Image (cartoon, rainbow, N blue to C red; front, side, top):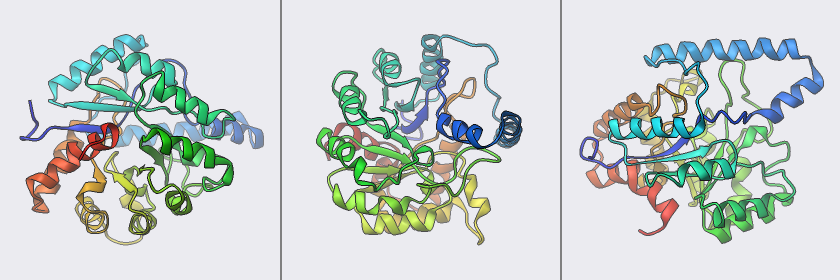
Length: 315
């Protein structure tokens, strides 16, 4: 059943696996190599405290304390999706490529992305296996965790493989983590992707969270490269840290003016239960697109068609 008359595809969610996956493992290991574990625990505590405040501001319940099997979590996620009238959800991470593939393959309304590190020596082959053998639909990279510039020639074989596979590549640039997170590491600035996007013009890149604090840089990148997309995911709290007045309505309007409505994709960054799909983000963006007087066709593109087109092709 459509939500407000529109089909909804969440292009950006994270499966809350209990596999022990650490998406920021490289950052933690690097920190421990230079400093000590007590300081890391202190920073982690600051981050968690900030997240708790954000959850409270959005009336979100904290994560389940009990550990459930991934298959049980998946069942609960599917129930949540149905209860909230969400058509399709894309998990961009979920305990490794094989684990996520096994989970989403049992449900027709879920799909998943490969999410191994691009720095792995066999990253291109691993990506091909994830797409061709495991049935995953795209590739997710956390740019601030990568220790080599993303425009380095060492990654060209990876971009070439992704282009051959005709999959979207979603790359998180900008701030990473909660309070005491990262804001200016190597690869935080999305403009580092300009040469890559021009060198592989048939490969579509999705930069989430409107650049997560690097809004100006992403607008310039999107102006320069028509194969650059953005998504609406997350709370977009980075807006509060800009040195000038800005709100979500203005952010979306600016991106539509530069990217057009066919290169903006709806996402939430949803993850843990019992919160599940963050319905309040959807409600807020629905209000905003109506305030901007977007046509129904443009709204349908943002909330469903654009994401579906990147994954499955078509017009």
